[in-house]
Image (cartoon, rainbow, N blue to C red; front, side):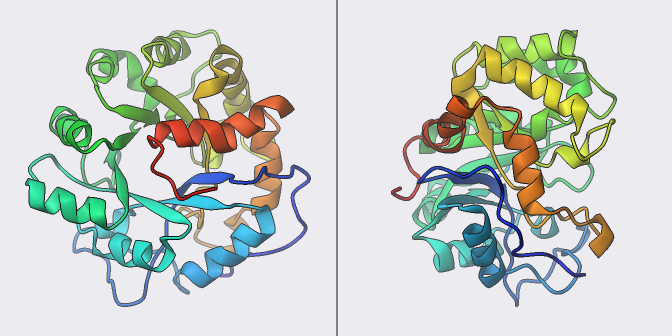
Length: 288
């Protein structure tokens, strides 16, 4: 697998302190968990590679999200955080059965959030939502919640009951489609209006039905949310684009940045890249 870690800089310049709220990182010596989807294609995307991407794009800080390859074993995540603590914090996988000792261990290791992924390959799905929410509230963490957004009306009541700060991952992943004025986006607005919900721009290529380079369907929905709640948009690279299995499938990160941040008004980018991220993660990010 050939990945690009540098190239022509993006046209959009990131502000000082910009946060990549969605990426994955790996270390040698941490094999995939049995029954998982497996590690990304070799060579393994490691910290030295992502440092180049940070310099290329202008990223200052980042969130390492526990990858599906390791399911509920957070050892790789903690090892990566130990390498990157001046720049990074983490979103781990828990299922709500952890005791205070384990949660403190994760917290001390740089974890400030928990991941729900109710899609094939995910370690912990929506059935654990209430139990995980109880733990994240106790710890002052946030939650990253991912599922097929086409079913959001079926889940709205349980999502509305979340007490933690949480982010709707990957533009809601409306795999069967949604429209800016449709019922699914109306539900997203209602959830955001509850006051503890953010909307993440990351990995648009995973669910866009119209496709690149402009991803018009995801762009239209994002613009609606950006107009409705400019203080609730965050952004991430989704590096190292784990669904890409060949070099031909691998996106140019600078072009992807320009496309996705171009959906926001220029005055909204400071909020999305710095202020909103700091609010979502409860002020627990590394200093700017």
